[in-house]
Image (cartoon, rainbow, N blue to C red; front, side, top):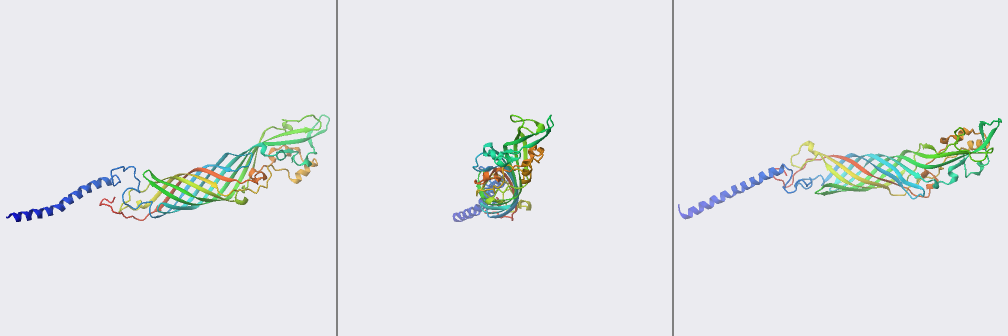
Length: 396
């Protein structure tokens, strides 16, 4: 074999060996990729700190369009924000709600709406100086700012030793009040949110509004009452004689089974601004692959978040009720003519009380609902099978 023939043979063998060498290198890389696929990553660097959105070139839950349905429950501390002198913002109370949700996501932005039902209970402490003496002091069952009741005396049903009946004036003083309101709402949330996808996980923020419509409610007022007597036959004030109905600091409670019209223009509707932020977990999804089982198509998202709701417009009540209910005209006439039994006046619970936000005391002030709390949401969606983009034979 000549020298030229030997050169041609070596060159031919070299060209044939190059594909084989390349194939061996690919196979070696292929084995490494197979091992990496078992740890759900495309790199051995910082695998544990990567989220689904960062693991390979796969379609992501946080890209494209998605339709989700689900529910949420929330609850927190609630109160009324206002500037009414003598009415405290504390102790406040609580609010809770449950909602059915629909959500449309496109990319990192999502829109959320739904329907819900909420409950709110708020207590407000009152100082005695808020209520004028004319509104919280009664003589013979008539408010002290009504002079027509001052000159009439009641007849004591107990007989004196000489067989006569004494005449007296009964005085009631009320104070140390706490007014509580319960409201039940139909709710319509309208929110827009944005996903914050990063190495630490999936966060989100949401901003929007919520319509609250009062469907029913009630108010309960607690106070303490003291009653004394001024007899025409005796000097001084008679106190703490239970037989005559004279008692000190008697706990009272009055419930009014109707909703408090705390809404826009004294109606039922409240529009609240909504601010929310939290973290989302995706429990049913693994790394997206070309061939996935039908169960992997289920998209379940669990969210934990904190939120704040506050009335956007100032709310007002009709403010037409009295702080304390006085006797009816018929009973007032009976008192003035000495025909009303004293037992009617010794019963503290016969005096009605109305929530302060339903009285003229609050009529010139605006009130806002405020709730700060936490929320738990679960959303579901059925996703179509997805393709893998620029993936190796191990589909990652």
